[in-house]
Structure formats: structure tokens, C-alpha cells
Amino acid sequence: MSAPPGVFARELAAVDLPGLSARSQRATPTEVDALLRRVDPGGAGRPAPADARLGLDELAVLLSPAAGARLEDLALAARETTLRRFGRAVRLFAPLYVSNACLSSCTYCGFAKGLPVARRTLDLDEVEAEGRLLADRGFRHLLLVSGEHRVEVSADYLVAVVERLRPLFPSLSIETQTWSDDTYARLVRAGLEGVVHYQETYDRARYAQVHVAGWKRDYDRRLSSFDRAAAAGARRLGIGALLGLAPDWRADVLALGAHAAFLSRRHWRTEVSVALPRIKPSASDFPPVVVVSDAEFVQAHAALRLFGPDLALTLSTREPPAMRDGLARIAVTSMSAGSSTEPGGYGSAGTAQEQFSISDERPPAEVAAMLVRAGYEPVWKDAFPLVDASAQG
Ligand code: SF4
Image 1: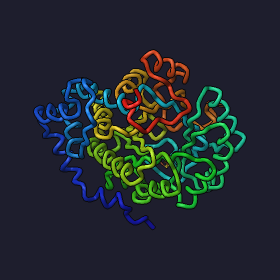
Image 2 (image 1 turned 135 degrees about the vertical axis):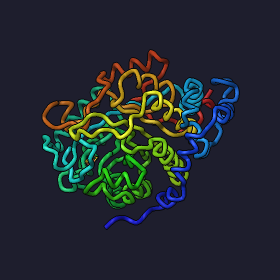
Image 3 (image 1 turned 180 degrees about the vertical axis):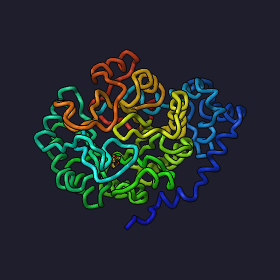
């Protein structure tokens, strides 16, 4: 049985996403100019204004083709906002894939049930061995990732994984199936800090087309999972849309903005992070229905930064080095580095199917060195201060 719509699903249903997307297409250069003057009244970065609070209508303008023609100005304004709110700090984390077993069938994923790929679920000693390799590389923020297999990756298994890794990692998050209130509470008691569940697309009809079977097929259960996780004490909530999955990428970024604003309002003690992965090659051979260009990708990040100055923006190794290095200077505040997307891939690569291929293969130390050369501090351990960095002298 499907879950009933939660509070945000009802709020989203009242948002006219097609209308906002059409509004984006119609935005004029004059409207873009006026908005840029609001978010950055002195021109690129001079002087620092109080952050303008923008609504979805303004986000639609920032995502417009007209704003795309002003990408440099948009990026400069976003950069100043990022510096003002986060300072020169970029958090580094690593994904640790504990299993690629999956009982769901998502047409875009290399782990989907039924695909003839090599499957592996790590035992606790193997998990710890992978964790120690990542700890030796400097990581203290870890994202535990798995397919959706309620037997191989049960609640008991995941709690045991968190307990095993907690002494090595002060910050642990999960990107797994969604859970009940009780399981989130057990995971938090074991030391879990964050929960990541990408909605992939907020377009219900498209969601049903690509989530063919399994637990993840339930749109409303997935969308309401954050209320259960936050109520259980999770301090970081990660949301995302997979660009290329639905034909109207602007509508998905608008919905993602609405979701981020909702979570920030409702769970104000938590850090809300947002990600916009683009579809990469995988064993699913899924073709993107729309190609989001590099310029549009940068625009979407800059627009989200101006819409949500306090949002953590996360970027994975799906993107190539040049894109990652550029976005770290504009909007991104959290990056994975040196990633493997196969279970056991750090210590024994090639023993199981990867989820998708990565494009930035630089070791973590090299990514950290890039940030230092750019004048940024790679943050391995500490949480971002959730206060205005400009107020700290
Ligand atoms: S996206 Fe997640 S739930 Fe869907 S097939 Fe892949 S691992 Fe399974």
C-alpha cells in the first residue's frame, strides 16, 4: 500500500510547477537585471548586501534562458553569497558503498533488480576495512550507500555498520532505502548524523515511469521520509534531483528549491543540503531524456545558491575536474573525492558492479590541494558554522 501524501507533498501539489517553468521561459533581460541588482546591488560582490530572500517566482527567473545569457554575473553574485555565508571552506567526504543488492527496479540505475551484474554486500569486517582506508586518506565525513534490499541491508545490519564505523568517523550519513521512525531513531542512537534521499524527479508521472517496482516506487513514502528522520534526530538532510530523468529540468530544480525551503523552515535545527547529479553511464544503459548543458548546470547551481543562501550544495565525482573546480569557487560547499561506487571498491576494486562511472578520478589529496591553491580550506572534520561568516571578522 502506498503512503499517504505528507505535508510537503500537499504543499508541492499547490505549486504550479508547469506555470513557473513557463514563467522561466518568458523571463526578460530586464527582469534578470532587476533581480541581479537585488541580490548583488553593488555589482559583482561590492558591497556585501543583506541576502535578499527570494521566492519561487524569482528562482524561475534565475533559471531562465534570459538569465543564462548573464551567466557570468549570476556566477559572481552566487560566489559572493557563498563566501559570505560559508567563508572559504569546502567539506570533503567519501561514499562507502556497503551493498549493491537491490529489490527495486529503477530504470536509470546500474544496481536495479534483474540486471545481470556482480552483487556484493560487505560484512562488518569488510566495511571496517574500507572505512580504515578512507580514514587513512583523511576523511572524517562518510556517506554510507546501499541498494534497497531489506534482507541483505536490514535495519539491524545498518545499525551494526554505523556502530562499527562511528569510532573512526565523527560524521556518518546514509543514502539507502527510506526507513520507519523507529529505525531512524535506532540509527541516530548508534551515531548517525545525516540522511540523504534524493527524490530523483518531483514529476509524479515521470517518477512512476522510471521507478517500475520495489520500495522506491512509493513517491509519497520517499518524499515524507525526512520528517521521520528529522523527528528521530538526524542533523543533516540531503535532497536531490537527477538531471536528465525528466524532460523539464527547470521544473525539477524549482521543486527541489521548494523542498529545500520547506525542510529549512520545518526542521530549522538541521542542515539541509541539495545536489543536482547529472545522469552518467551505468549498467542500465539509460539514456537521459534531456541533456543539461554545462552552462545550464552552472546556472542551476548559481540560481539555487541565490535562492537559498544557507543551503549546503553538494557535488559528486560524477562531474569532471574542471566543472568541480569551477563550482567550488561559485556555489558548492561539499564535495566527495576519490570515490568508488562499487562495494569494496577501495580495497578490492573490480569485485562487484559499480553504480555509475565517475569523471573525477583524482585522489582526495589532489582535490584538497586544488582547493588550497584556489584559496579555500578543505574541511575534513568540522561541520560548517551555520552562521554568517562575514560576521566573524
Ligand atoms: S536507485 Fe537505488 S533503489 Fe533504485 S535500483 Fe538503484 S540502488 Fe536500487
